[in-house]
Image (tube, rainbow, N blue to C red; front, side, top):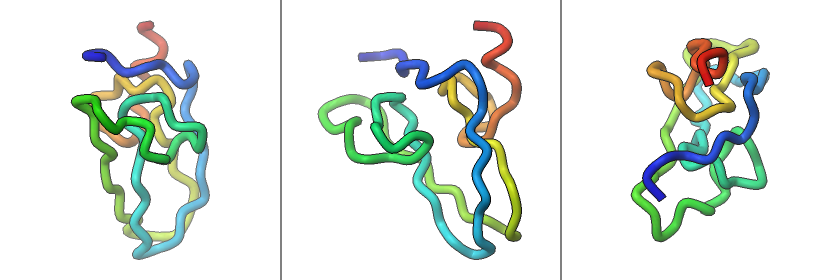
Length: 79
């Protein structure tokens, strides 16, 4: 697998906690989207760590094609 699976063609809104680290699924196969559940094992993909600088809502990429991984940059509109 060289291309990630598109989990959904929209971002995942998530309320994050300041100082907490989240591990975003880069392969698209996780059953716990947008977060990693280890489904990438055996592939070239690895989760991307995101540390929340402040509490609030962030938009994690759902299509897995963002240039600003792990956050959405609107790449899903071009798929």
